[in-house]
Image 1 (cartoon, rainbow, N blue to C red):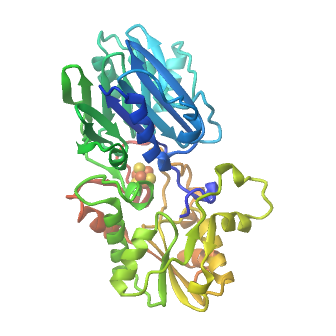
Image 2: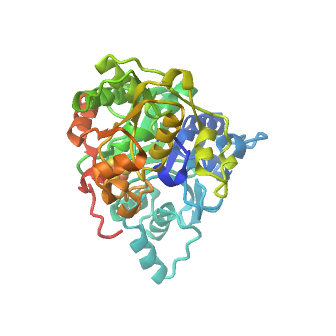
Image 3: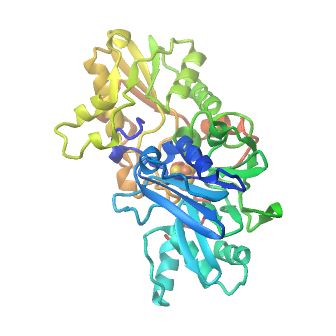
Length: 461
Ligand code: SF4
């Protein structure tokens, strides 16, 4: 799937978070951390830093470089958290995070990746009791629960709030003197712990540590709350359940140079998924190409396994601004051409395997196949490096209905015909789990959008 090529046909991750405790250039470090996490959200960015007991925040709509142009990242203070967000069209700067709240215990800033399945119910109950919400954000629900707690200290109030909410969250909470990093009981979203000098830091993905030259220590565990203060770092278990890290992190969301669990990089795992796909669904062709960027690793694996040349048959234009593609643009085919070019000399007259990471609505695959055929490709065999997505996600990925999913609406042959491919096959669920868990010590995965087996109750959503 080509990132952002067509919003209606792409999966979107909710967010990326980064936080650091006790560093003289805290906000600057967070700025670079957010840079590395920009792929997780391009709609808004923000940083909150605590300076002499006061929390200051700067946030706006736009990319990290846009929001923090002209030195606006120079927030004073030695502890800070930051956030990048992909959000729905309803979102405004009010929803941009970190969210900052004053309550009877002081001031707190919160940054969250993920979505709660019972946020609407909690919000409705609190509203009936008189609460006034400023945003549509699930994160504000957590803030309200903290503020209404009868506990005297923030740590207890936060634990109480986390016992009420259900769903996915990698949550950073900043107070005047403490940084909390919390993961939901299933660990649906990734969160890594690192260290730069004497300062502990947290990031949605370990690739953010490489940029700031921080040492990766470990991943935050499902149901864990890590507390960092002047007394050092403490780990507290706030709740526990079967681990279920989102498998789409491996398929699409995470950066190839990140390490989500275990020792292998996401690139290595994607390559293994490509090899597994070749084992399950081989096809002999002149060359293999991947849809840039997220499918390239899998395409290399597929090509290696079948000893077919891997070629750069599709090239992504990295310099098309987000605003350049407008909804009212004349033709959708031109949208694709703006973002993606075919290297005609490479593909013309050849039989090609096109490896892509997933199919959601099928429109993007259809357009890419058409581009290839228009460039004179003899046959296009589409191989999808994930199982068919049949069920919606309730944990922060914007597939809200089965009606949006082509696999839930058409037979495999109808999909093949719709996208114009000469053949179409998917990786099996078992094959994907083997490819991932072989590299990551049998860590549990969320497979709900493939199987319909959700790791949390969803009746409340
Ligand atoms: S339902 Fe799918 S996209 Fe959502 S968290 Fe689970 S694996 Fe990830």
